[in-house]
Length: 398
Image (cartoon, rainbow, N blue to C red; front, top):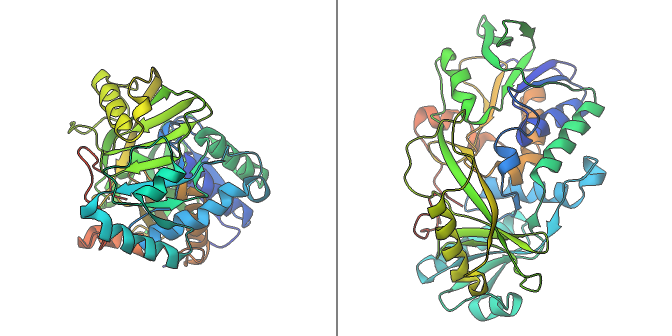
């Protein structure tokens, strides 16, 4: 497949955290980059992300993306410039007896990848987390150096770094279609009918991705899923790390010194959401449910006052894992979408790897082959051997 050269003209559609990371890495490598977005920089789900920076995955290539991205968050000012707001809190995924063998296997796999993680007993977790209820916990995997970041600061600093390297951003400019000629992507046409030519196009448009790919006769099969997070007030002395609670079916993290952010994976079975028209505030029953599940792990939060919250849209692929790489059937057209709620923590190295793939035909930082579009077309979906059985309502994979 013909690829762009390092001084090629590359268009990126989408200015979320992944699109801005790709733009930064491409521009740093010497490419001429222009980013288009129908809204603003960080105008979609990136701004609404829970922004966990953890490395516990059940699929080794995904864990490698998170592990190598973790270094970016730790050394953001030196690598990217600006700030990402990373706060190291520690992270624990807790499981009951039915998932204990899976957790041991996954922790061993993660350690082989290079992740600093340790399997701990309930008693050991209690020493680390004195405010946690652990009687139903068989084992936990603890990452001492994981944490969370500021999703807006992260995305905006990536965009600023890309601009310093010469990238241009055209915000509030919707893309109507991708141009192609002779089996090759040649640019885009915006909503006003203006033509923008390019040597390569990369679509990073979240839930709007399939609409741009469909005229080429391919699509990922992305479903738009409305996802909510809520913030609860917390006494400053009530400290806790980040949790993915596979038993209660929730995830939560501290937010500053006096708030806790909490969410549920796959809350309720809703009809597919419209990413252009959805309720952005919390549902009352969601707030009650997430507080109840949060209190199962941190009992002192049982009556925590609700502070605020919001909803966003996940772009969920058929196997709930990202699709990254070349689009089959059309040279010089690339995609990075379908992140299914996990795009933030891997965005730095997804950007590095996608830039390498676009410029050279090979992703060296992390091999993106397991995430290729071909698996979708062939029906060979990603299956992890030690996927967890999740608690009620937790519909997402780890």
